[in-house]
Length: 183
Image (cartoon, rainbow, N blue to C red):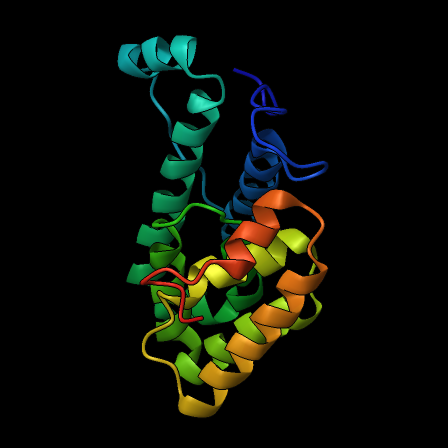
């Protein structure tokens, strides 16, 4: 399946599912290139069968392999994680999945510490693109227990960004006050 075939599946102007997957895969590709490694993805009949019924699944599956390849490399080599903190953060801020940000968040926590990661996520909510804002909210729960001052500033920035969010998916992510939202 080509990148972007899942475009148009979700509500929203510029941040439909296909566009989000494309952005996430591009960020992971850039990270893997910076690390000088390649994700090997073997053909799988089960993936092909699911992709036939669920457009975008092949890309989603490929993204998972790329994320795990980067995670395993970075988890084994903390100096590489520190040296590539920026590209890892970019990949994290393009990951709109509810659960998968934990892998790259763990790498960033080990490489730069909890406060640094939380400050980066706060900055993304305050001044990032809508996709970065939504992904920062998703990653926040994996950034460990917040420092009190950062937690309150994060919640305030999140509420402010939600007021201005035009894309329905972004607004939902920013405005969510569920059990893992810290909001």
